[in-house]
Image (cartoon, rainbow, N blue to C red; front, top):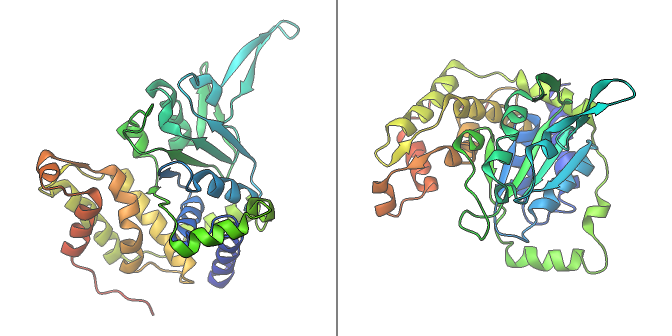
Length: 317
């Protein structure tokens, strides 16, 4: 695969998903790039703006085996991971896989379940494996979790543990459509469901090839240093109580390579890093009381950091 083939394949997938997700091109592109960079996606927004529709559109366009779970307070960890049952005939325990055994796991309203159940996702998101009764089972490749959550403070929601938030490569928000976009949604759903028109334009083999190509995108030493400087700035900022972890630094590097590939380049430039930095960092930082008193938001603080860190002298060729 070369850079032109990669960029074309990415454009084809985005165009197909856009049949069902209208007016949110930026969100669609970022979600796809996270998938191609072997990351997980958290989408936070109010109900009814298309979070689940987008996840389902990706599962159809990518022809990936997918499972969907609606997270509620009574969901158990074993529902996700699976469990062992004794088989009298074979005189042995048999493992029954949970819903997480697929290529694309859609975790709907993930913050409506208990912390105990949420913790069942930690191993599978980080190591792409599941351990039950001392036995470890590898998950299929490619593997991605797309989770949706309602805004914190909504009725029946629980805060996700910091360790789980850190495992999501990016956090996105769909937001309300603009006027023209909402009119287009009404017309598209006048007498049909746009999701039914989404066709397969890729498969697991193609996704694996894209992931392999993107993983080998060139990163200059100056860009490595720039990424680390951005992360370090979050750990020393006067309004931040908890800065970005090394896992967050790695996530920014990986998805920056995806941005470069989507732009038809085989090397990363600082603008790629800046484009996605907020989506990678904002859910990983914790603001202090001084920030709350000044009404500063994570977005404001990350924007301030990006402005304050000098951009290295590298540009597109």
